[in-house]
Length: 262
Image 1 (cartoon, rainbow, N blue to C red):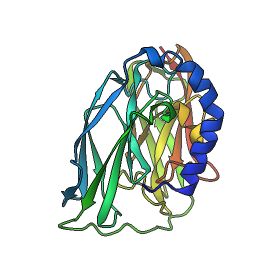
Image 2: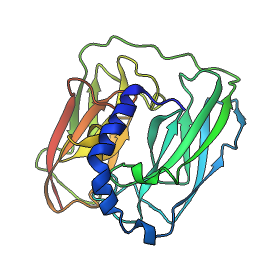
Image 3: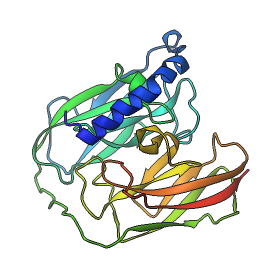
């Protein structure tokens, strides 16, 4: 299973910084039923002729909630991550997920499914993770996407606006310039000019490249955010440009807005 050197280094640092606190926070885990993870499809050894693979899972003893993503951890509540060949694709909160095989060479590949806490940490759940191998044999291969020289990237939040009041579920809309947003490249090799954006609340700092407060990621110009788990009052939201492997641009490129949560 391929795991980039950069990603492995980040995981090592995250483990050193988080694991002691995690062990304490999960001290009650032994008294809870073990999370059950099954990959229903693709079947082991399946041959995939399409350019996407549909992943179907069955997860028990784990309440799936994207609304809580990036918020305080809650026992028994979280989501799961899908990794393609060791590269994080996205977080998921339903029983199915679609993974693009864009820029993937034909041959043998792996899908890994692992539960994750609200802060996206998976360290405590690697024993529950499941992996399946499939073969990609495309009938109509996609042309590989190549790097693009687009100039200096920018992103701004166009909605909500500073001082606006939000409650429940609301759209966060952005405008990205000199940067091509792509879901198909989630978790793939980095390409100049391509990536996506993460939505964080209140901070961009912290372990795992700041993913602890990530409410979600998007390859479109909008994202449905939720105030679940946020205390009423002022909060700042950050739209952060990320490369395909979920690392922020260097130097950081982001837009922000401060709103009132009711």
